[in-house]
Image (tube, rainbow over all chains, first blue to last red; front, side, top):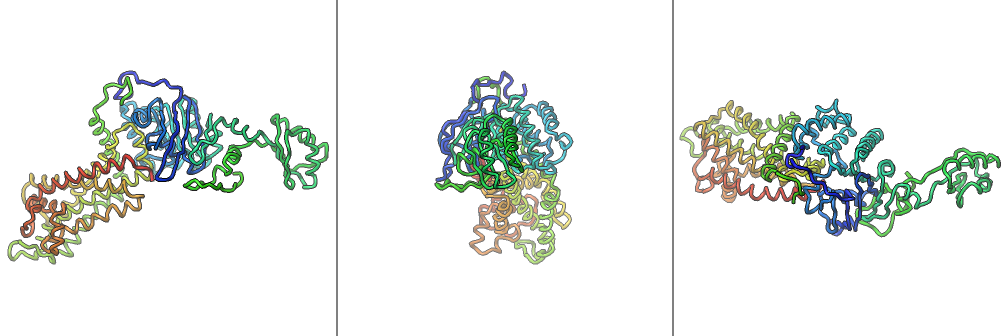
Length: 343
Length: 283
């Protein structure tokens, strides 16, 4: 048995949900950071908690990871109450925050050894598990160098490795790729995908829509401490309409002819602005071929034509009236900021 | 509180010691990875020894010394060294202040707090490591003192007691340092706040001048300042000159008062620091 304190069979409560939260409210003084968050994460799934800065994502994760006490509401992680059974929750989870929380003067291996020891795991287990993680996260060559010599991506991978030392079934990732360059980001996504493939349940917070799109089975959109939407990526996209065809015409004069030519192809009312044409379509990418043929038949020349699937950014704009990456004021304000446009 | 099926866990105290030792070992290992910091931590008291020994050397009279020897620089150096020892161990607090403020700012404290470990162990380990590091500092300081003429005059047993008293005091102030480190908003503040209270505390004592040289109201403060008692006790145990006797109970029972002060300070600041730690949020 790898846990010193549990030589017997480790009790795993059988609950459908790895994480279950009801009506979480958190007040900091007179600021309401969470205003009744309900959340479930089914076992083996990835749920993305999506929202702008200050929307309450991190506060939610900190409550679930036993770092903060909720003002009211209840939450269970792995079947354990986060307030009354904090130690059992802590044994069930791994937490990777927004910052690489490792000791930068210790080597990668020393960090893992330390955290393994603090998890009360046996030395031999920690040694072999550290090796395994260092190889898996491509840190084997740097294992015996102080972490302060690591690149940003390497530190995040070490940080993630540290939260995985005890093979937790549930992983909280709080903005795991914030501040990383695109290559490191994709590298970290691969690592996370692999963990999920192996059966880890993940609750991920992010303000990057493509990240939620890429990793999450289910997305919970929160804004100003409340859940404003919930569903799979495609369900959320369907809520604001399906695909659109977007065409840049060679000249503005042909706009009228284009509308006419495509009237049998598109599925809804088109909009034009100068040489830009946009309309909702149904039927997938074959629509593009039909559109090109129809335009060609009417001698409308085209600079660019594309089928655009709505992004979660569109979802966010449609639901909150502001873009996902707009900075939110700390205190909720009645007036919404104007839209800043797409990414 | 444990889940059914989880058996034969260590008693809480066992885990606390286990986890504290892990934290202490990591803290010490990390401190040796920053040779510059270690160097400056060692060089600062050495500079103090040299400054006081050679700059103030003959200028500060030690009352109560043998007639004719007053103003003898070697006498002041013997008087001075326990003062420097006391001042140096007081600065052990700063290491805990800065270390914990940094750990908090970098988010490591969050990670510790999400582990199923003994939570006070983070502070016990950190303070223990910073006090233990004073062994090295005291060694370097003792050698420097020996070179400038300081001697251990009252036997090895008393000398060991003197060093133990200094280490106890170091451990005590690291708890104050830990509390300050967890209370400041960032590491920049920690760098200042970690030191600002130690300077007046060490100078308003008998560390460098006999307290009889201070104005009466300051004398009163200095007499109850635990650093004075520590330095007085250390002087007695090393067999160094102590200056003229005073009427203060705290100085006439210096070792006892030092131990009482340490116990009281730990009893106040350890629970305060642990409570601060439990509610600490990454800043």
